[in-house]
Length: 246
Image (tube, rainbow, N blue to C red; front, side, top):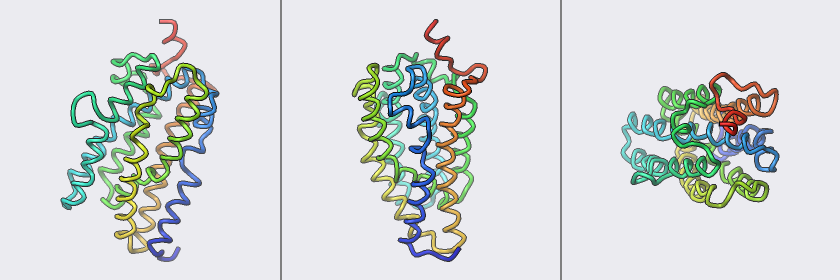
């Protein structure tokens, strides 16, 4: 591997997304094509809640060890996006409206009692990565947001077209995410291109993005294994059949 120009580095980062982003996962294809049962959609929303809820902790850990005030000011947008400026506002609150709309008990969702172990391990690995790796690697790991508008558009259009139990209000979380992700990924990409100036740092940021793609892929692997095939739901995890019977 040779040292890349900033534009070559960007092309390499985008190539990782083209090959590794979780819009390619079979569970995502099922979800937006209308091939999931309501219980499978509920399981996806319940497990994805944990990812949403942990994002502010991840971002706060990055801010807490950053000595550059400009970066801290920029990164605070992310906390406000997820936590909201007031109670009941923000991305986490909107995600809970999604789980409400799917018929899941809010206290059960927020307790994370029904979480898949694979989800917990993947999400916590991401939080630890951002806390423990270099600031450059931590910022680079957020660059999956470069690709999120594509998956959001597929998800919203497909779910509205294919599930009678899903409404535009249910999916309101996704209304604000594309412009937020665009803003955040523009900043992170510019930062990475300006600071990954050695062979070692360029390899590190590419590996960081690969790691983050693996986190998202592993979450869908856990869902597929537990709720599609072979349908081995771990003890204590959300069981759609038992939930519907209760």
